Length: 506
Image (cartoon, rainbow, N blue to C red):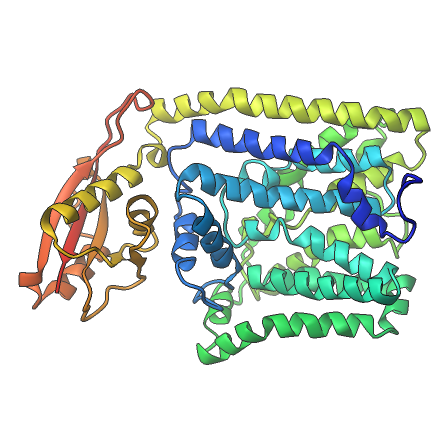
């Protein structure tokens, strides 16, 4: 219930976000996770997704040959304001996840949960893997964490409000739906789910008889129009990438892994919800999953993206990837609390808040305590990404350049997206190129990681391509092989890595 001091005309979904306490707790969530990764990690993700985002963010584009542009836009905008360091990249990652958690808090209120249950749904969701360990890697899956909950928030607001407020909700629905698709085309699964739920529920069918849903569609199409034009101008490059992800055959192993994703990704959150709700052991183990009826909107919002994705996997249209499940379960804790708190007394409802706060704070304390232990484990066991000297390699390359070149370095090419480390750690003005320019008119370098120095690897596809490119340009190219390693008290072992660079000046 809203307090008597709140204007009755103010939508509840807006008022709920201003409740004291949740903002501070989400800030604490972000700071603890950033600090823990500052202690435990010495690099960004091992697959180079975050360096690829950084490369995309160097220039504003309405698309790429792999994903829609939102993750590149967000990364580029972020690093125009903040220095390119791992800590600030992790701040971006967990800040985005916190925006999604705030959306879950608001969404829980829209589905009628009491304040204590809303808080519990938000805090317990932070224990789920997509919002904890997996949120650190900002990519095309994680970019959906801050968007999907708000798509549903605005979808409900557009239905439940009338007059100008209804059109305001419809405008934001169109905007967030477009942003979701600009984040990843997989968001079409969420929009399809909401379309089905709209047809299943009386409120949704009534809404379809008004101009508001069509206004939302118009807004979304207007926002997407430049990206659609980019697709036409570039032979539907990113859609071709999506199409190539499927072979027409059912990948049974990936299908099984995705089918088990709700249990694996949200197990901690589910158990924590059960602990915070009084008197529901063991009956709550089963009751928490049961829908109220065939037209249970919350059930379908929570589960339809999962069911539809499984159907796509069964069709062989796409080969399912487990990380696709990362944004999928944003409504799970709301659904579980709704099912478990319906018949609680007021005194039992009041127990949820202190229990959920205690679990949340205890969880963050555990994360802080384990981060140095995890760092020690990686150091003792020689984990490759822990010892990979990305920053050191970039700094050494720039020192070679300044010692031997007269003009500023303007581009870097080679082993993409690993070469993004030169711009991220070395010189942010260096343009990251996916391919080596055939006849460059500007000064630049080609960088080829050769792996562990102990392996004596002298050739890779990157060096082969660079050697072919260098033919006829010998007088303009200086080739350097060097080894570098991370050193210091955090690194008990010396594990050098070798790099080959080609410094070019026309």
